[in-house]
Amino acid sequence: NSKKLVRTVETWVMSSVKQGVISAAEGKEFLANYRSGLYGYTYLE
Image 1 (cartoon, helix red, strand yellow):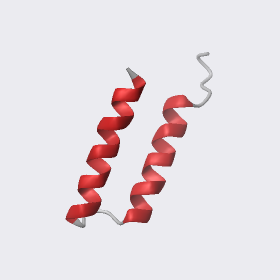
Image 2: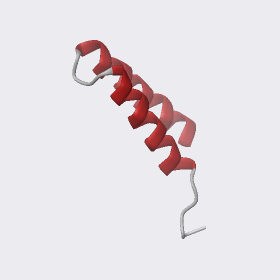
Image 3: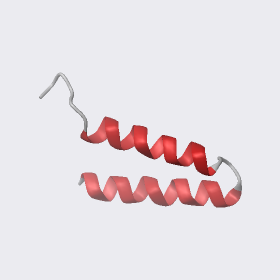
Image 4: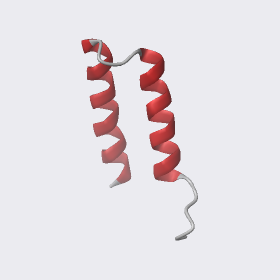
């Protein structure tokens, strides 16, 4: 389920930002790229 995957990754990113592992900007960029890859066009379609 793609929605569950996104929620899981969002939770991981938020936790990483709170712990100082990554910045908020890095977290936003990562999530944007993740969503784009998950929902975007692939040559398999």
